[in-house]
Amino acid sequence: MRSSLATALMSWSMLAGLGLVFAQLTQLQGLTAPGHPELRWAYAVFDVTLATSALVAGLGGLPLWLLMLRRARRGQRTRDMVYLLLPMLAPAAYLGALIVTVRLVGGANGVSQGWFGAVTLAGFAAAATAAAGPGLALRRLQPRGPALRLAATAAGLSAAVMAVAAVAIVVAVTSLTLWARPFAGYHDGAVPGIYLALVVTAATVTTVSAARGIRAAR
Image 1: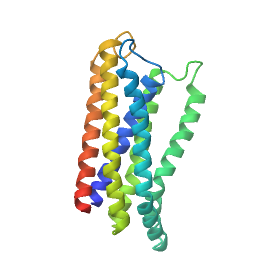
Image 2 (image 1 turned 60 degrees about the vertical axis):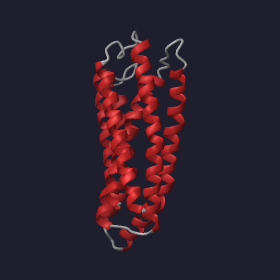
Image 3 (image 1 turned 180 degrees about the horizontal axis):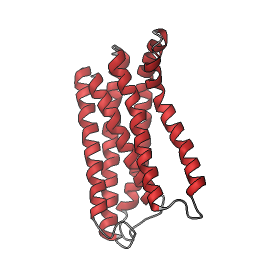
């Protein structure tokens, strides 16, 4: 159960990161395909499901996180305390570095494509670090009981909702590739195809790992 939960957390974080890239490069840019309302529906579904998935995962995992935090503090396990705090430390460090980077290399139109790619990769690294911390703490502290079962169940529900978000991403990107080819990045199907492959892979790993965790909880 703990192993499946740690894997689901990591893959869910990568899928959420891919979703944020999708939102930044498509939805927030106002990209549409006239005559194809499914694109706007996909945007709306993505917004709702991403927020719902994050809420379910956060509320369901909070009791387990607090349980491990108390155990690490009572046992004076500094390393485990750091692992558990990484979900807050890593994003804060990334945000600080992002602000400094934009101020140093940004222009009137933001940062260049090269710097945008670097910032995006750094964001995935921060997400992986934030997710790896609790996963390592799970394996080291080996918690048991209702909090662990609740977290596993919440992970399953969150993964199911996130799978719907992944479907919305696939529909939106496919629609843009087919019917909005003049937009930069969508005139050639190679880059969108690689992106969708990553989304499907992350969604599959998240769903399978979460399902294994639920079966173990039962």
